Length: 103
Image 1 (tube, rainbow, N blue to C red):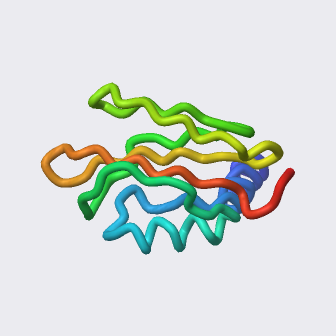
Image 2 (cartoon, rainbow, N blue to C red):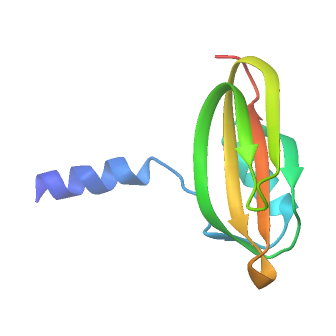
């Protein structure tokens, strides 16, 4: 029982965002609380459900569903996060963030 209680306490220390965001402002507000600011966005359409989040360092190459490629570079020393969401009618939304501070 002690182990289960400890695991629940530890799990409660990590805040996770909602699975669905009503709009871009809601997503940006959550990411700001996590220490990130927006640096790029591709696609639109809300509400949108999170499909995946990935963390990178220094730069990231994003390949969209339509095979369009975007490289975000010049962020040496920053943690980068790419959030991929699914909007209405299966539209793809990709939002890139960087940490507020260098690591």
